[in-house]
Amino acid sequence: MDVNQARFNMIEQQIRPWEVLDPQVLQLLSVVRREDFVPLAHKALAFVDMEIPLGKAANQVMLAPRVQARMLQDLAVQKTDKVLDIGTGSGFMAALLAHQGAQVLSLEIDADLATQAQANLQKAGLTRVTVRQADGSQGAAADGPFDVIVLGGSVAQVPAALLQQLSLGGRLVAVVGEEPMMRATLITRTSESSWTTTEPWDCNAPRLSGFAEHSRFQF
Image (cartoon, rainbow, N blue to C red; front, side):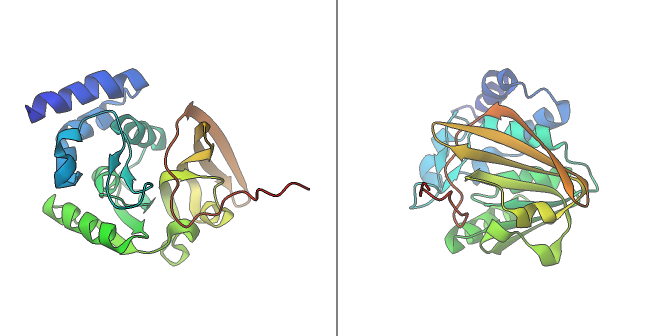
């Protein structure tokens, strides 16, 4: 496989058509080596438009390239931003965020994935990322507030605890809802007690571990 050609094709055939046109995001995707964050058994899938398995559980995946790229574009990460990444997975999203923001704290509930992600990030020479093995559903209040919060999977709803950890003007992106139709959701804190929400695009994604589901009971 011609890796550079495959990376080029990923950007031009998957990511641009998904309305990811920010030149900084496209440049980042061309230089951060996605293949270095893919498990050895799935290296051939590094640039394919699909979720890549990372662990034993069905929800342990690396999101499709176009989904990660679109999230990154919507967040408009600034050089001074303090970032919380929930659901580290392979560490690829954390790597992208580290190139754009000031510092990244990445939380991964699975100990094996957290260890592997830390190794991947160290090999990539990224020092502005800290990977912590932890349940990210309640965030990391002691380390906040955060200018950017990214959820690397879907949730039934965004916990209020995470919204409270956004700084004024801070942005959170997550995939929210139930199959078969979930929505990418961008929430921006506009004051101490108010947030604005947009749902710019449709996207299904596996559930993040540790987050509560809606009650199935009907009254």
